[in-house]
Length: 215
Ligand SMILES: Cc1cc2nc3c(=O)[nH]c(=O)nc-3n(C[C@H](O)[C@H](O)[C@H](O)COP(=O)(O)O)c2cc1C
Image (tube, rainbow, N blue to C red; front, top):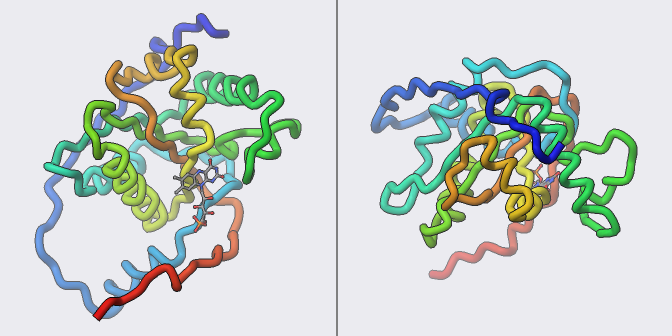
């Protein structure tokens, strides 16, 4: 499997990015909807098999790339992967790495039959960061949040996926990134599972006492 040539199997997505509207003041229902979007997004770990169209992904990415970044460097490379062979291989690489290790969260179940490190989502988004840019991880976190919120606003579920990051960045797994045409000086910052939600998870506790106003 390791010598598989993925490149011929992978298709490129063309992004038709339009200019976003500039200053606007939101009131009433529009304002509530924007704020509700933040409150009602959840990490989704069960997906229907329904695919996500390239038009939907294109819409999502139009909003994603309006994320702010330090000096507007946009030090990311985004790959939206639907290729089942690549996804299966990624899961197999994770299982090989996981053998004998213990994990927290959903990865703790890796020995269960049919385990999927990306929750069987039909789409897997890789957010890679420029290794030579000292704030690229932060910038990638911001584009991550734009993706999560834009997906939620358009009826799609997401889950950030950090557990598989160290596996993808291991030198012996570089072929996985090469298959996605991720440049040599980039590594993986974070990933996102994307698809139609098949669950309605409860809200997780938030720690409001971590915020203080100093007057
Ligand atoms: C950087 C980051 C990495 C994460 N990695 C994983 C992961 O590997 N697997 C997973 O199931 N959830 C992962 N999550 C989801 C968190 O567990 C989830 O966001 C958190 O429990 C809060 O729940 P909520 O998103 O539903 O509000 C990650 C979230 C973040 C921000």
